[in-house]
Amino acid sequence: MNIYTRLQPLLFVSNLAAEKEFYLKLGFEVSYESDDFVAISFAECVQFGLLDKPTFQMNENVPMIWQIGTTSVREVYEIGKNAYLEIVEEPTAQAWGEWTVKIKSPSGYIVIFEGPED
Image (cartoon, rainbow, N blue to C red; front, side, top):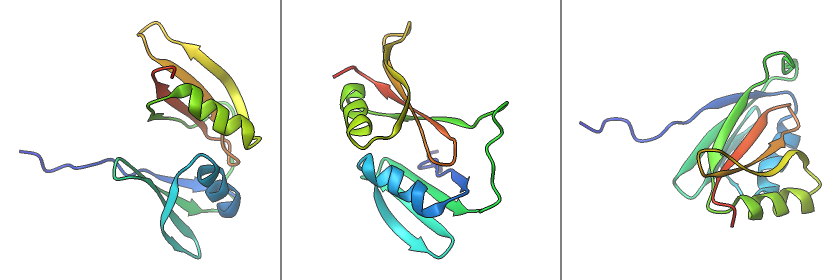
């Protein structure tokens, strides 16, 4: 029985406009928007929401880290670098055979993009 179709996390953000722009620079799209919410998507495979909470502060001791699959870690890295986004870790080969790159969002989320290098 396949009753679950996708995971759609909702993330608190301290600056909705900056967070939205971060994901737009990485090639994502806005699929819905209101005064305090933005739905972000990429094709039909990635969907998540950004909830405006101006008092939100990322806890540096327990940061929120989440991962998005990609077909090219190198391409995501180049997009982030050219958009002057904060690269936390450059493309790195992992022991399990995939590559990762870590980029920090304006609200402090560490977004890991994982997949083949090219």
